[in-house]
Length: 110
Image (cartoon, rainbow, N blue to C red):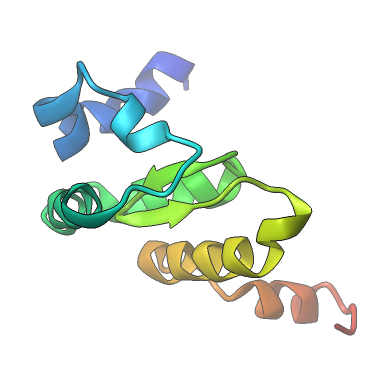
């Protein structure tokens, strides 16, 4: 499957349809505050491709931004715990197993 065909799902996303001219709201390296954060969460909650968005963020190990209504902080030492919690929340939304389950399936002890 071509990359263009693979990314076709994004054209059904609420963020694409309603804010395509403002991607910085979704990809900011700073957590949105107050009303903006609530509005992004509301938009994501009604998005038909929310689970796919969450899964893609996990699989691609996205750098930072808001995915499926979850803010994913930058992958730096100061954010380790918050990033792990956000990734776990994205896994739940996507219907993926917990990161701990992945380690167990590999036969590696945590």
